[in-house]
Length: 293
Image (cartoon, rainbow, N blue to C red; front, side, top):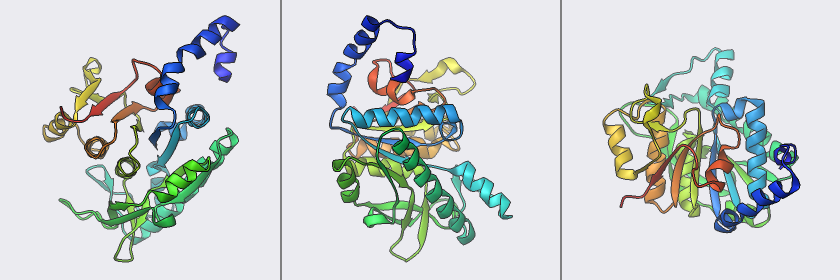
């Protein structure tokens, strides 16, 4: 709103813009939108301020935003300071007990920091982890390698999130979760966001990333895909078009829409106000993944 006020538009133009937003406000009012916050939008101060403002605006127009955050660069930086060399396989961090301790500490600090920033924008927020209120339960992630204390979501109990939204708070979720074996697991933030969106019956899942979306050929920027089905997205993974760190992002979108989320979007978080562009314009931004037809 401050940008609109300082944009040089006259009063009539400002009113026209606000009036044109009415159909979008009606569409999203009372709906839950899960936002995975990560990438440059977490480290660039201008982008960070824009994202916090966007989330606060959603809160005040009657949308129920739920934030799930990452923090990979911050975890890696702290690990290096402590003499722990970060190691990744297929876009996921290999997590030994020492790395898990650092991960939980760093992510917890990030979550509380995000909650404070939202509070400063006028949106009361609560930082919590998957351990709080039985929110998340995880099991060890099994795959082609051993990632150590990396987990996948076994269960989401969304009661606490519903309570916070109902009482006017924005939940900010740190993706660490207890397992039934007594271990604490590091859960990929994209996958956690997808599982939480499905459990909440969210109308949208937005993943803020450092790319414009999914490309058929990453070297050809004109090949950006605006929309594809879950099956088509799986085909891009199988063909190697989607690789490395994009794999968990696309997989979580596929799982989310198949579990009832309205649609999922991979959005360029380097673009100021990308969240509002996606929700309040027909053009949107990034790549949308929808259910199979």
